[in-house]
Image (cartoon, rainbow, N blue to C red; front, side):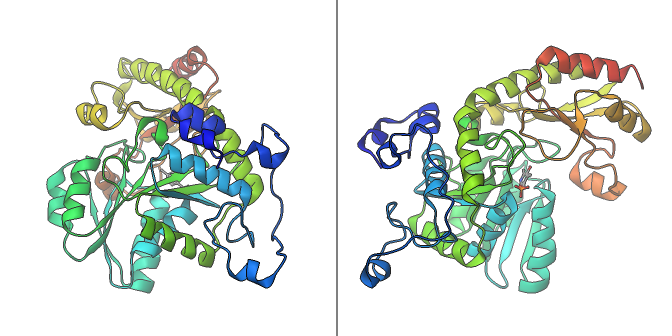
Length: 394
Ligand SMILES: *Cc1c(COP(=O)(O)O)cnc(C)c1O
């Protein structure tokens, strides 16, 4: 790392310049994609004695790669961690974290509105193959965590704001309870990004991102990240990533570095559009409820202001109408395309609960008709007018 890196404190400077070593790449302002699977050595001693954390020593692409390392250094600095690791998907990052912290017979506490496939992993694979028990909580009240985290709990899984309904957890409060009982706190920080929320500073142990969303930012890459503040945990994660094999390819890492450079300016625009769209929806006569933590009407607005400095482009709403109306609204939109995922330049609409049972919807606190939208970068006025027109169809 060059000396000037210690002066790169702001998130924009980190995204632009931190972790880069221009002098090693002929002063190219953009680092190369190190498209190699191995590095060679002069002597056997050089090979056997090398330190895997030394950023000028590499041996094999499943262990580490210089392009991947630049991405990790930037994420580590942005999240105020001691280390960060890149993965080939958000799920590869999440699964590596769970399998590193937990063992057979572990107890996990997880919020009910966490990302669906992670819950499938916990309630399916982890329960069936490792006898890991998961207790699900709504997560809005600290008392629930007091009641469900015990001395036998190894991991608490948060996602704040959560998927689909955007409910928050008090990160500092949960970290205090978990800390007293020796459990690690993991949080999915994909919605806020490091720009609007820094969970390690609030007491969390592991921050996870799917870089397929805002970090990539252009809907052209799948990837994940973990950042941690405990060097021991970092060492174990590094060795398990090597064993599980989840490192991303250098091309993907390079795309994530490129995405990071503009992330802050992009999410400011996503936030501005989402805020205007949320206000438009909130006053629309056909809308029953809007879920967006940036709205003062959000039930946890005060908590939001304590632990986040902003919100991004994703929100959901429920209409006054039938399931058919909700589907028709989604299909009448022209700019918002029907699709999962989010965090790219494009606006998207999805009905995440459309095929769930009434019972699951009740537990997840979102109507069967709940409509999730991602406000992309096509311009606020265009997005509102697209919604206005679609409402005329129902
Ligand atoms: C998309 C998503 C994930 C999974 O990330 P992948 O890169 O698709 O594996 C995890 N958490 C949240 C909140 C997501 O939206």
